[in-house]
Structures are given as structure tokens and as C-alpha cells.
Amino acid sequence: MPTEVISRIKASGGEYTNLSAWEAARNANLVAGDRVEIAEVYGDINAGGCTFAGWTMDDTRYAIVRPAAGERHAGVWDDAKARATVSTGSCFVIDGLNSMKVVIDGMQLGLTGTQTYSSAVSSTTSAVGSLHVIGCIQKGPGTFDGNCGVRVGVAGNFYFVANIIYDFYSAANQFTCGIRNTSASSAVYAYNNTLYNCGRGVKDDYSNIRAKNNLARACVDGYQGTFHADSTHNASDIASDGPATGRVTFSTGFESAAARDLHITTTDAASLVGTDLSADAYYPFNTDIDAQTVTAWSIGADAQAGASGGGGITGSAAITLDDATVSAAGSTVDPVTGTGAITLDDATVSASGSITEPVTGSASVTLGDVTASGVGSVTDPITGSASITLGDAVVTATGGGADMAGGGIQLYVDLRPLSYSVDLRPVSYTVDLRPVSLRVDLRAA
Image 1 (cartoon, rainbow, N blue to C red):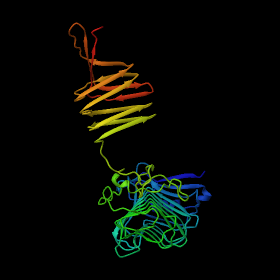
Image 2: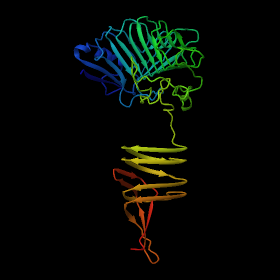
Image 3: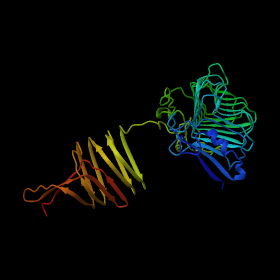
Image 4: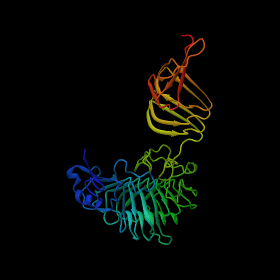
């Protein structure tokens, strides 16, 4: 198996401070060296662009540009995450021998100047083996002629998958595109891309683009040219636009088009059902722009509707944990404003922090075969009514305070400072109970 050689591209403490320096230093015969060269980009610096040329590669020994761990975008442009932008010319140029293979995965690529006839990714001079642009955001400079998100003009296999491409726009110039193919010898696979505010979303001059599950909106023409017969399930806000098979007309919005948050909403997901590409003959995959596993195939780069949104639960909720380990720390305010149920099966759950207004109606907690111990102090735990059932339980508490009255004994136990753990047979459960008090009636004792 080839050796992976990882270089860090960062402002300080890495091997290189830009991709051009990395490409020049690591350019080599990777087949002879039996290695894969990987550039891992950090968000503390603009990594800039580079030209791949002169490398010797094959399908297993090749070059990868990707974010370092924790440095990947979340489907929306973020200047604090891994990015490569240029103000003149193209960002990435891939021109090499027929065996060259380059993978650009999860990056933010942008043109930021007034350049024309440039691209975020371009391969137009000499043939390549394969180029993979996967899960990237490609941002154009706005209204300047001839710019493209990705442009293909040579022979080779080109895979453009789960990308968001926007602002490569010109109303009159037909060569300003999100994805453009100008080669009769190429094989282009455009799968699950979202194209917004582009002159032409996808433009094919030679029927070589297999377009599947793409979404074009706010483009002069979503799909221009004749596409490969395999093309299917593409959407546009222009009626009868694009390859006919599985065609969808989509005219509503995104999470926030103005902010270029082009995740689809939950409302729109039902009308954007795509075809399953997890076993595609040419490029099987199952992740979207957010690197989330696709469980329900939709059209566009975002397969999980509303994935970028925030907020808690404002209706009803159920959480089922089966053979799971869950931990949490922090502070929770108004966690549920409706009804909620949590089922724990062979689970280990722990939590620490503070809980404010955990229940404002009624609540019940049932713990079967439980060992519980706790220390802490509790104030107004529940407003309403509540019951706690402990089946075959042992409860221990430490703290202070006693209240004895009448013919029997009542023992008041103040649980301070607040820690509560429950052992549920195969389940261990620890909860921070800022508000808990326990009264034990020992009259028979």
C-alpha cells in the first residue's frame, strides 16, 4: 500500500504556508516513490492556488488537497476554515500526463478579483488521468465574462460531486458557467451539485456530461447544450430546462440565498427527490456537501434538508438510544417546550452542567432496577406535577438537614452540591440535578 505523506499548509508551524510552495516541493514521481502526497490546509491562512504539472501518478499514487481535521466548511463559506482564493487567474490548474490524478476534497475555492476567463478549477491544456472535485464550495467574482467554477477542455475523467457553485455570472456571455465542458474526448460526471447565480449552470458542448441530481437556480440558463443519455433527475427554476429524464422544476428558495446558504429547506426536500447514486456504475458515493452520510437521496449538494439550521425542540421529541454512549456538558435552558420522551436501551449517558426550567408541565421518570446516589441542592425542580418511579432501587444520599415530627420520623435530606448518577443494569446514567430534594418517611422504622 502506498505511503501517505501529509504536509500542513498553515500560517505558522506547518511545512508550507501556501499550496504553490507545497506543489513545487512535493512534485515528483509518486509511482516510483510509492506514495500519496496530501496537502492539509488550515483556516488560519489563505492557501492560494497552484498549478499541477509534471507529476508522475497513477490511480493509487496521486495528490490530494483537503482541509485539516476541524478545518472543513459547513456548507456555507467561512473565512475561518480551509480556503484557497486568488485575485488573478485561476485557482487550481491541472495540466499533466494522461496518468495524473488529483483530488480536491472539502475545500473552499474562490476568485476574488476582476479576472475574466478564469476558473476555480481548470484543466484545459493537456490531458489528465482523472480530476476529482468533491464537496467543495466554489465562489465566483460576480459579473465578469468567461469565468467558471470548473472548466474541462481536455481528455480525461472528471468527477464533480456534491459541490456548491455560485456567482459565476454574466447575462450575455454564454461562456460564464458553473460547470463547463469544451472537450470532445472527456468523460464528465456532474453529480449532486448546486449551481446558483451563474450565467449557465452546466454547459456541455459535446454531450459528454453525465448530469445527475443537479440543482440550478437563478441562472440565465440552468442547463445548456446536449447532455449524455445517462443524465437524470436534474432540477431548474426554468421550465423544461435540462435533460428530460426525471426533470424537476424548482422555483422556491434555500435556507438563505442572500447569504449564500444554499442548503435546501425541509419544506422543499419533498419536491427534490433524487436518484440513488450509492451504487453508481461510474462514481458511487454517499456523502453530501456537509460530509454527512446520505440516507434519503435528494437533488442538489445538500442531501439533509435544513442541516445547517440551529435551534432546539419546540414541539414534541423522542430520543431512542440503543447500545449507545452519550455524554454532554454545559447549560441547558428550556430544553423542551412541548412533550418529550427518552428511551435508553443498553446505554451509558452522562451529563453535567445546570438545567433551568427543565419541566413546565408534567413529567414522569421511570427507572427500572436502579442504583442511585446523589449529592447536591435543589430548588423548584418542577412546576406542575411529577412522579418518579424507582423499581428495585437503592437510593443513597449525603447532605445535611433533618425534620422530625409526629409519631414517626421524617428525614429531610438536602442533596448538595448536585450530582446524581443512576446505574441502569447495563445502563449508567448521570444527571446534574440543580433542583432536587428527597424526603424519606421513616415512620415504620
